[in-house]
Image (cartoon, rainbow, N blue to C red):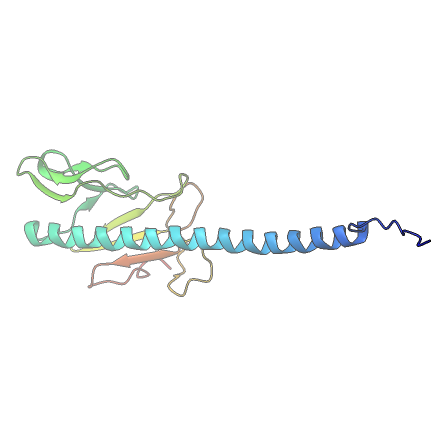
Length: 172
């Protein structure tokens, strides 16, 4: 008679541990790549916001022959009646309600809740500097400044300015 050999089929414990380890390594690589991509996306949004703001400031300059004033705390004074009230990042509309001129429907806010943008008007509102804090520390456009905060205890590291001054000038 033929003997029937009863063999159990399945994976050994070692094989399962190897597969679980490989899946864990791949997941951690994927997660770090995803997190990095999210940070770069937020940085791209910050850069776009600053470019849009600069365009609005240029339109403001064309109308008033000066850039908006600042309040000394990083906010611009270009809202409300006569465009002389402090604007709030993320909620205010940059407009002159007297003449109904709208420069920006809603001022952007930083995509991260504990950060903000910083605006500074210089030399009787003939120059401006605008700053943000980028998350990607390897971004080629980072600048080194030490005295401008983009949030409580968060130093700005990226900026744009009017064409007659650099973002770093006076900030190093």
